[in-house]
Length: 482
Image (cartoon, rainbow, N blue to C red; front, side, top):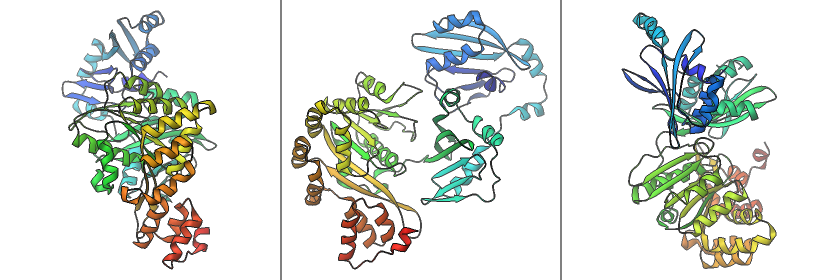
């Protein structure tokens, strides 16, 4: 079934669906404009959706972005489709034709009320998740829904087991057209879903041995500020750099997006610059304060991180945020962008500051590594590596390791002596540098985190145990093994 059939079912008399590149699909009526989906469509996506329902002799005209008008029958409805293009911008208008309009106009108000589109069924689960203070909702076929609260998985015992048919209905109702096509091809897709006034959710839909499944990660509507997040003065000062590379790293679910969002928001409030973010998908939505912010979503507004990053150099940015530096090309362009007078923020899935530098260098062929070490020694300004720990009494707190690249660190990077960086971090505490063990140790001493939880999160465990012994703190190894 063509993707547009689901949208066409929404049309009533004197209404039209408008699909415009760079915007989300909307339903227009005399009462105003209503968003149908939260997904922004590219010109290629608008064209592709219209091609699915166009007559065979009109598809070539659409491919060439030529204006086209035609009628299309979806079930019992016949609609008029008007496609036009101007430069890179395309727009398609879909409206009821005359006969449908007369029939609909004669309908009683009660019938019109029934035609109103209900809220997606999955939103009820998301609202329940939100009330519980959960960070994630997990849906797996043949299982009850589960949520992650304060880092622990909990089954929703009052919910029924999700059978395959119901799972497909739940997820198909919110899948944007592009993602539905992507899921059909590769059985995996990412997008953002929003409940207006409540929260946004980063969604991954996948297939496993049980059938269709999904994970929803909650993204709060309200941006957590750098001040409320408790970021140190040295970290906040990175927002005033004119150029360079700043990396926020950590495992999945460690709060990297929240930290980066807080830094972008701080820049938005304190500078007058142009910020470009490249994300997959867009998570936190930034409104204009003192800066112009263009947020681009991979697979919707651009083909890839590397392509968007290359294009950003021609878009007059001051600050560029790269949601994920996942391949050699993206990393290479990010370093070059930082060297050419731009401030670049990026993320990597590494656990310590030193391993982050190693990971970047190791991405390159051996014959380029010497050059990359030299480039990194001048362009890299800081690495913030973080992990989330369960707090005593509930909630979670971020433990942040901070490396600021001074002349000593730059020399070590240039000479390939990365293993000596932790020692420089120990002696650079006056410059705001912190090691993960020291931060975890302080959280334990302050009775914010249990020693066993901190031990699990520590990377250098023997050194962390030695720190605990200085305060006479004994680990309950039985609890750790469980």
